[in-house]
Image 1 (cartoon, rainbow, N blue to C red):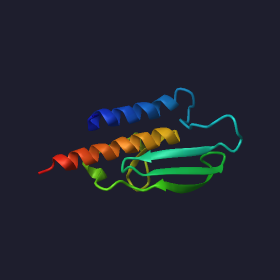
Image 2: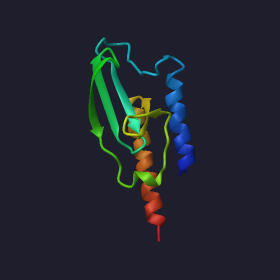
Image 3: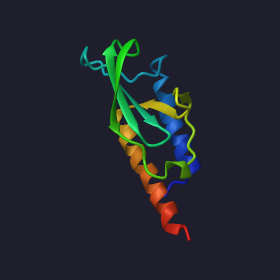
Length: 115
């Protein structure tokens, strides 16, 4: 199983990789003009998405999944900072879901070994 530091680095690397093809880091599908949905994975395990008047101008933010219980155990820090102080990354939906599952597994593993 991956350790916390390795997972944090892997998540940040996935986020940074999107900047290689887009100066804003946005992962925008090209097959549809309405495909401008942007997904964020937060350091607490929550995932949000937004769709609005071209990417980050007019926007509405929606929750996909909420924070993980005991997320503070992980102490993850991502490159972008939200207004409430949590940090986040911009990823594809599948990346967000897969990394969140791994975050959950690390928390469960830690709690199972706790005396």
